[in-house]
Amino acid sequence: MDIKIPTGIKYQKEIKVNSNDLAIAYGSGDVAVFASPAMIAFLEKTAKESVLSHLPAGYTTVGTEINIKHLKATPEHSIVKTESYLRTVQGMKLIFELHAWDQKGLIGIGTHTRVIVNEKEFMDKIK
Image (tube, rainbow, N blue to C red; front, side, top):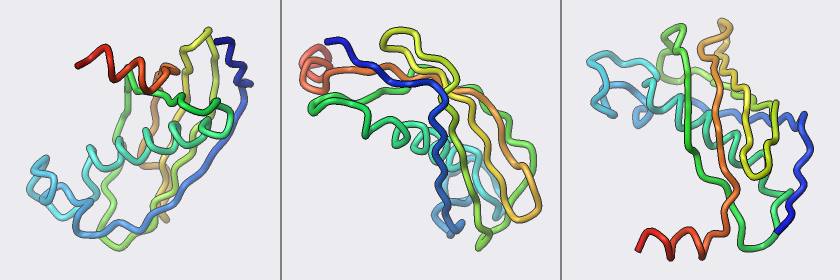
């Protein structure tokens, strides 16, 4: 199937950091700050959602690579905003630029690659 997704798609999301998002809850650290795995998952979700409306029924994207720098700690109850920017489309491969901010500024930056897949065919292959 020939799927055309335009480059340049920007998409933003926002969350309030709660106790489930902290490094202590994830087991990735011992302090009560926004966990790197939580930030990464939120950035990845932002990229995934950004292209959903451009996909035909039965198709989705799966993450294949992520390269994120977690620059600053963010305390519980802070608002975190994320943005994905679809920089490159190479056939079924999508390459995103990602950013995350809290009230004090930039907290995360990086890139993420996702691949467009037919959900049923993808699941059939891994069974």
